[in-house]
Length: 90
Image (cartoon, rainbow, N blue to C red; front, side, top):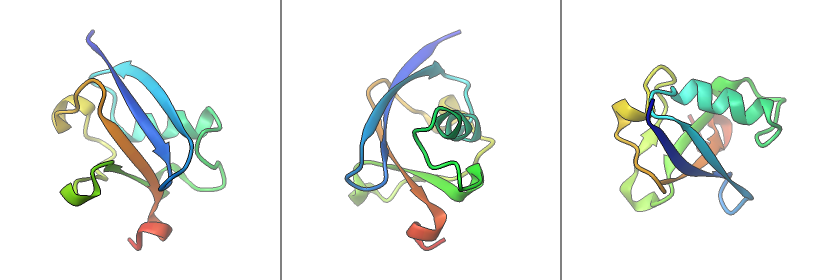
């Protein structure tokens, strides 16, 4: 199974963490893992988070929790921002 390494930033300008994960990990599994690890606040249900490409000018949001990293075309070294839906205005 192919692994990729990505970086997730907690909110805009927050702390970050490196994540090594199988390419067929879903967005939902990644977010649940980050909540369970204590990186993202546990007072939000996992579906309250969205991932955005760090390059905010691209406007790419990853909010389909059933889609895998492979389906989204994520690459090694890609950086994402995890933002709660309430902060994102969704």
